[in-house]
Length: 87
Image (cartoon, rainbow, N blue to C red; front, side):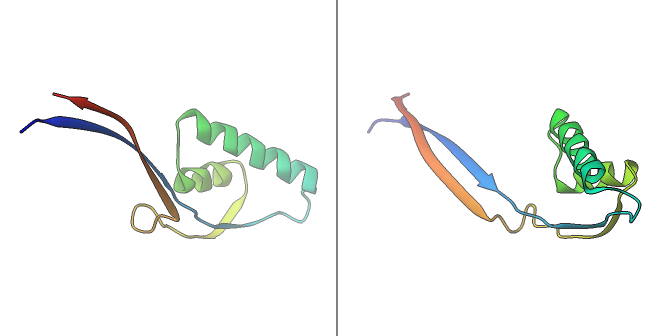
């Protein structure tokens, strides 16, 4: 009998929805700039949707509601065996 180690790479994807209110005195261009800024800030520390909502609120965008699918309801999952070796 031989021991074998299997190395696996798994990617799990979640989708959430954040509903916000765009202020009436804010142009679509200004709104897009805020969204881009929030996304960049969120990427810096690998935050999730909850973190993005907090950043949006800090930047002056009112969050009305948000879904929370992590970690219970992944949208998609992929698994790949990337290496097999004797141990």
